[in-house]
Image (cartoon, rainbow, N blue to C red; front, side, top):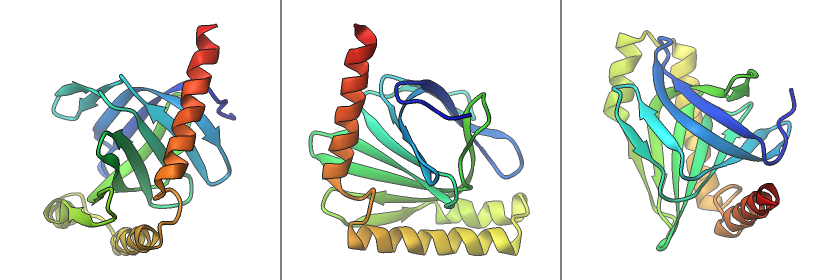
Length: 179
């Protein structure tokens, strides 16, 4: 099933053991290619696995890759574009939601290009608790290295001009829906 620009979808992230990790009540499709789904979340409810709910107050252009073991959430803030990268299985749309499996490690990238690797302890702990196979561990570590190289080279989607172009497309689609 092909996703169409302007279509709203539900987004679900699971853990390796099949438990629900996090959900987004809606994301607006901007584009779908063979490589990725690009959507915008804005004013969407997010529900965490522990039941906490929060509302997205800033727009985020999200890149959910179909063949890569990560996704990238680009948050548009007054101070610039911040990127939150989740090491996760490739994403797929199954007719119900865009889904992936979260593998704990995260990369937070600041507008000036510096970054922090987050949740290494959680990744190490879950390797044992959830029995990540050696292949999964190697893929996640390799994907983290690839992400860092992309940040250093400012490769897509780590380019604020690209993020603003996608956000403008979202605004244009929103205007069309209101007519």
